[in-house]
Image 1 (tube, rainbow over the protein chains, first blue to last red):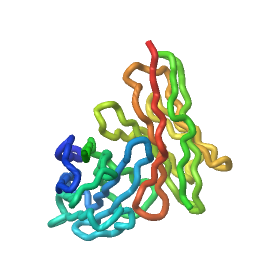
Image 2 (image 1 turned 180 degrees about the vertical axis):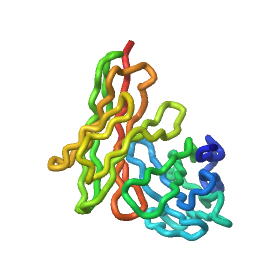
Image 3 (image 1 turned 90 degrees about the horizontal axis):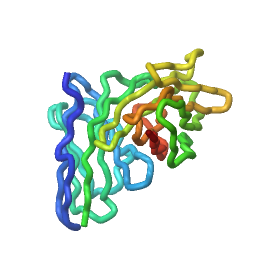
Image 4 (image 1 turned 135 degrees about the vertical axis):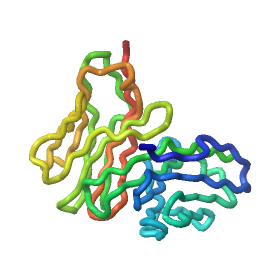
Length: 116
Length: 113
């Protein structure tokens, strides 16, 4: 069974440009999450999809970030326009079960975004 | 507020020895789950071990065990017989009530030959 995959693994863009990150969750996982780790800081929750619907987007930093999950399959996270402070590693995760403390999320390898 | 605290930014351990990575948490929820993830240099996040708040016994998975002390709100990870491949970043995490997982700042473990 394929795990969570993210593309690209690395991205270097200039300030003001647009970048789109993609996440393919584990097949059959309705729950998809985006997290971000800025250098030296803890991993922060960005948002959560249940199928194609945004369940919780309380962690999205500002309106330069737009996440979509068309058809409830893969998800994209677009940053437009990118700023220097957006640099970090963006993780995607998916889980099968609904609400509950005993359901671990399976993570992708992350996309390292560098804005210069 | 929910919070995970990892006070050790970096740890060194000699190969074949055991090491304990500290984690304390704060939550007002009665039902919660505690997780440890490993992040090697390749970047992926690997799930290691899970402990439920109502579990009476400490979780174990191979060389990994979780020293769960509920009254002290601690969930330390113990790695026995350390191997060179254990060198990585380790994150303690908690999930309670809702869907999202919160993470600590991480501890970087260095295993010396």
